[in-house]
Structure formats: C-alpha cells, structure tokens
Length: 127
Ligand code: SF4
Ligand code: SF4
Image (cartoon, rainbow, N blue to C red; front, side, top):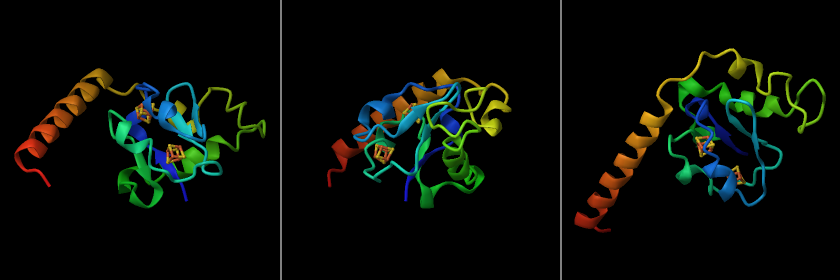
C-alpha cells in the first residue's frame, strides 16, 4: 500500500512533504512530485503538511484523481528503467500534457486560512 500525490501538487512543488518523509521515497519531477509505491511505508507523515491537500492514501483518492495512483507508480517505470532518470520531459506524460495549473499561491493562502479557522474551532470546542 502507498500514499499518492494527486493533481493539486502540479506547479506548486513546495516540497514540504519531502522534508517529512522518513524513507526519502518522494521524488521531484519537473512539474510535480511522485511517491514511489515500492518504497513508501504508509507512515502518513507527508499528508498533513501538504498546503494544497494533494496527498492521499491510495484507497482514499477522490474519484476524479483515481488515475494518479498509476501515474505515481509509472513514473518509476520510465523508459530508461531507472527511477533516477525519468521521462525526457521530467514528468509522467499525463502530467507533462496538462496546461499550467491556475493560481497556486492563492490555493496555498486559502489552505492557511482554513488551518487558522480549524485552530480557532479547536479552541472553542476542545475534544
Ligand atoms: S506516507 Fe510516509 S513513507 Fe509514504 S510518502 Fe508519505 S512520508 Fe513517505
Ligand atoms: S507538500 Fe503537497 S504541494 Fe508540496 S510538494 Fe508535497 S505534494 Fe506537492
């Protein structure tokens, strides 16, 4: 089993997840990052730090991003056969073909606001 990086990471790449991963199984492409399913140990450390909620446990992937499980895995099956020498574009072909993703900085700002609101809610309604 593995965690998967889905579409919201594209053109963001702040690498917060890379810092958290204890086994260094998150690799950087040209436009997004990819989790190697053969190396991920399902520790969950990366998921809460993603500012745009791009990381999911594979069974929890939203339907519209279901293909990202294969996209992450296939990135490590590049034509060169080496995980360190990805596709010529630096990305899985599906990612490389996407148009630029909009307003990544706005997405991160909205995420920060939601986090602040959640913190306020915890203050008023402690567990
Ligand atoms: S779940 Fe853990 S091991 Fe897997 S990518 Fe995230 S931080 Fe790395
Ligand atoms: S933390 Fe999220 S947006 Fe940042 S690089 Fe990782 S998956 Fe991409």
